[in-house]
Amino acid sequence: MTRRNFLQKGLFVASAIIEANAFVGKEIERFFEKYYHEYRNDILLNKKFLPIPKTAYYRYEGEYKVFDMHIQESLHPFFAGEMTKTYGINSSYLGETIVIKPDEKIKVNYINHLKEPTTMHGHGMHVPAHMDGAVHQVINPASMWSAIFEVKQGAATNWYHPHLMGETARQVYKGLAGLIIIEDDKSNLPREYGIDDIPLIIQERRFAFNQIDYSPSRREIMHGYTGGELVVNGSIAPKFQASTRFLRLRLLNGSNASIFHIRFKNNEKFYLIAGDNSYLPQATKTTSLFLSPAERAEIVVDLQGLEDNSLYLIDSLSKKEILKIIVDKSLNQNSFEPNNLIELEQIPKPRKTRIFRFGMRRMQFTINNKSMDMNRIDEFINLDEPEEWIIENPMNMAHNFHMHATHFRVIERNGSKERVMPWERGYKDTVFLAPGDKVKIQVIMRDFASATDPYMYHCHFLEHEDNGMMGQFVVI
Ligand code: C2O
Ligand code: CU
Ligand code: CU
Image (cartoon, rainbow, N blue to C red; front, side, top):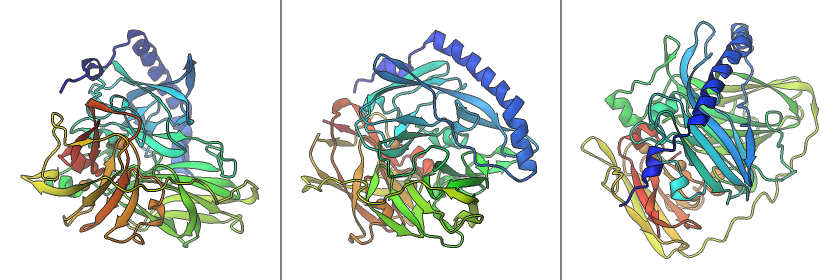
């Protein structure tokens, strides 16, 4: 297979790098002067407010909306006494939110200021394989790589994160991840970012002496690296002051391997409006949902009647608090109309069935008895042909299955349509499999074919992915 050398090496753009270093220095300085002192006092007084990742600045180059994303080492105030060494993207931990719209032409410049190579993958993005930012699009230190694409998909909460062979788990754990919000013009949903439309990147993180502790043992690689504090947008147990009647929360499980069962402490009801990659055809009222690593969901809570009270969003598996929501004494009216959010395409008859079976061999994870090999293409898929994929987890541990290139629909879980969970009923890109589960999904590859540029599929428990549970496909 021919490799695209220029993409592997990355494009060195001297002027951008110099500009970038100045930018990083200035940012950190500013951060220390103002933000850190305020934040530190907040931590000491235990009135930490939820940090909202800033929306990334963009400019236009011709018809392209251009974002400059600086991947950098930084320091972040998780705790009052000491700064924690982190990685971030235009930020001290995590990354700024990239906001784009359907049909826009986009260029995201990822500039690597780290002392190690990385890659930056648009998780959930429907883009050509060489713009996917996965294992083949390495960004070396002091180099830049650009994801250039047109937005050919609808509203969704996607995200970006490193995807370097064997190093994804550690780099994400250090702080590399951010949101990509594809906006639409639906005026009947709360959509004021940071006011009534709130992103929540939820991650489990272990700390040792106030520093991020990523040191998985052999056993922890097997079971996934879990435990520690619940960190939300880079803050431990933060508070949010709600000022509107309807509050939309965009939830991302940004953990390496932790599964969350998300609900409110007093079982307050909420509307589920979106899953990974789209709205749900029908908003459902419910009291809880499960999210495995990389899965997203959007929920809307009606706070009317809860004025001057507090709600607690929790993970009932770890019994930890995610977010305290302090409801104002009087709420601004905003609108929420839960119907007709999306019309999903008819599911066509599949022309082919493929089976993906999780396993383990010689201490390496496998899919269909093979561990990831960058020089091997595992599946060849025809463009525009509907397929049915069966994912099987015969192991006694949980996994999930994520695919690049496109989204899918979950058709059956363990032979039953009813076992497809309410948050799994839109378009998805990641699906959870408990031990023994078998899930049927429906897939069609559209728009982008290339015999030489592969896409990935893998378990999104990052220790599993890094240890072989991944494969490659091309669309032809
Ligand atoms: Cu979230 Cu292959 O990635
Ligand atoms: Cu992905
Ligand atoms: Cu797994």
